[in-house]
Every structure is written in structure tokens, then in C-alpha cells.
Length: 328
Image (cartoon, rainbow, N blue to C red; front, side, top):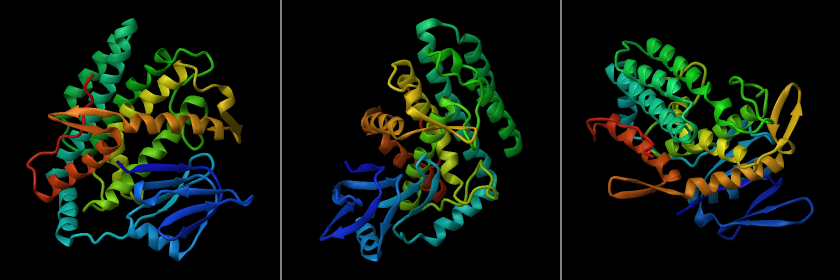
């Protein structure tokens, strides 16, 4: 299985025969096995030329660029010829009843995954019954919504209830969540969430570009606020499954501590030490497999599977769209 590479080093990314090298200022060279690479995420300053881009395109390797603290900057995606009929179907599905159908199914899966995660922790101390009951009630209301606006209001309530469990799940006194904060994240918990979510967005965007879908047409998130908004729709399905679950484990097992963060300009960010710990554990998690039907999928392959399930529904190859729901 091809891997995603996470690179914090800065330097010159070059083509050497049919492989990639990253040469740092001090002369150190890192070799990147391009035949075994699906995507590369850079967090340092990187210089590259047309020959390098040509090799990346040849091997269909996407590259995403982030700031040192994990803020998404942009990407290089090898060209894929999109079928005009499929693009038209995606546009039409945004303007007819399929949009609400897709949006409801995404929010429903998102909610079920939040419930599954909380139920896992509820087995240990049984203090989340009222939160689970509230989420179950909201889950039953999703199908009754008649518009995207109504669904978004309900989703906001779901997230508020879900977030109310965080400070109960987290066992370390050094990590207090309180509420979700963005731009910048105000505390350590929000810093981990923002960092992890940015990684998920980039991975899903890469898979969308490799599919027949176009990332600019989404079904829940506003088209005007985000240029590639479809990634945010699909990421909501996996945030609790992947990022939140990993965050709780890293905090509760003491793998992340206060010295894994930088505090600046009223914000809190994972520093290089914290990012290395997070990415190592994240990469291990993404390689783990889950069984769906008679097949096993790595969590990374689940992202690919989700994109193609949606694509197949929009293209008319399948009659329904059922997003991934975690089973524990």
C-alpha cells in the first residue's frame, strides 16, 4: 500500500533519475521513494522545479503545503481529465433533491460516529448517557429537515452537544477544551483538533482530485466561503473516527504534554515535537484496518472509498449513498 509522507524539513526537492531527493542547507539528503508514495505533505520551506513536478505527475503523487503550524497553504495535484457528463451530474445534484439527500446522509453518519465514540468512553464510567440520549434525539430529527438551512442549524446543535463530552473524556488537568475555537486555536485541545483536521482535509482533497468529482461543488458547506468545499463535507464523517479519537488517546496516555505546544499571538499550536508525535501515531492509525462486509480497508483507504461511493451515486452507478459509520 502506498504511503503519505509528512516532511518538516526545508530544502530543495529534486528529481534524481526516477526518484525524489530533498537536500537541506546543511547538505543532508532525504530520499523519497516515489513509487511507494501516494501524497507528500510539506511543513517546511521547499523549492522545486518543472522536472520535479513532471515526476510527481508521472507517478500521480499530490503535494500539499502547510505552514510550520499546520495551516494549509496550497497544493500541487497532477492533472486528471474529468468527464464533462459527470461534472454536469455533480452540478445538477447540487440543484435538485439529491443535495438534501446527500447532506442528510453525511450529517447522519457524522452524528452516528460521534455517538459511537462517546459510547466507547461511556463503557468505562457511564457518565455520558444524557449526551447520548440528546444526540440520538437529534439523529432522529435529521430525516425530518426540509432544507439545507434547517439541517445546518440541527448540525450546529449536534456539534455543541458532542463537544460537551470532551472535558469529561479528557483526564489530564493540563488539557481543558471548554469550546471550539479557530483562527487561532486558543488552547492545546483546539490546537490538536485544528492540526489534525487540516491533515484530513488535505488527504480527502487529494482523493477527490484523483476521482471524477470536482472539489468546488459541495452539498453542505458554503460554496462562497471555501474554494474546495467538498473536502469539508466528507471530512465531517471522519473527524470523530480519526482525529478526535486519536487526540483523546494521546492526551490520556500522556503522549502529548505542555512542552509539545507553542504559545504565540493569543494562539496555541502544536510545535515540531508535538507534530512529530501526532503524525507518527496518525500514520499508524491510518494503516490499521477495519472490516466492512467481507473486505478489510485501511482507514486511509476508507477516505478513498468514501469519495468513490459519493461519485458512484452522483454518476448513477449506485442508487443510494451510504457514508461510513464506525462499528465498535
